Length: 317
Ligand SMILES: NC(=[NH2+])NCCC[C@H](N)C(=O)O
Image (cartoon, rainbow, N blue to C red; front, side, top):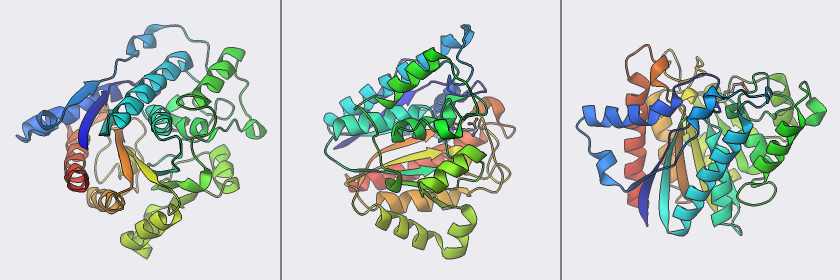
């Protein structure tokens, strides 16, 4: 098995522009370091719909949903194709709505396997068009992957077109839910809204908070998390850089949050998950160099993390 880098420079699921540039910012970070990472592996570009940002859009509770749904489909197809060709896809994406495509593609390629997900993020991304406070779809990928509508928590009145596209989104890759709530684990989630809190509580989704990881010990927490996924055959890691502390690391991301993990903690978490030998796909999202007040800091940190974990992945293949 070989690694392939998939570049998905799409930012239309976010409220702020620029996460599409995060992929190239990481590449530049590598070049500046004299690191040949991006020359070492085969790569593939996924075509994007960023021009749709200019269109008038009436889907205010799920902005640009038609194009986001299609983008997720493209990601799903690319992931499924490369997994079936026995590649280990490392996906570099812009905004986090992409992860619905990734999860869908994994399930398309491995229909009989049980999938576990490590969602390392400041946000729960479990809104639906019925509950989203912003209408930004990067806050919704997990709800679509779990097949949720959450109409019982409804605060918005989405138009019929939005509802139709949302149905499409829930059926990418394979029809229906791709993941069971007990096979979803959060790490570092600390910026959520009421509807998300209620969903997390109702579905009993475990969130390893930053304080808990520090208090109980990182190794213990990741080991326990892996144990919770013991009946999963395969694991997907979704790493949103805003899981890291904005003050300690960088604010170069669309929705930065304080009191997150530091770089070394992320390295350790990723390394221990990869050591399980169940990981089939890693995704890094939401680097936004346009918002970085520290130069290209977020991309540099994200690249260092990527470089380190790739070594571990390589050793396992
Ligand atoms: N992938 C992200 N950065 N998500 C941020 C979501 C923020 C907020 N919960 C919203 O839905 O608008």
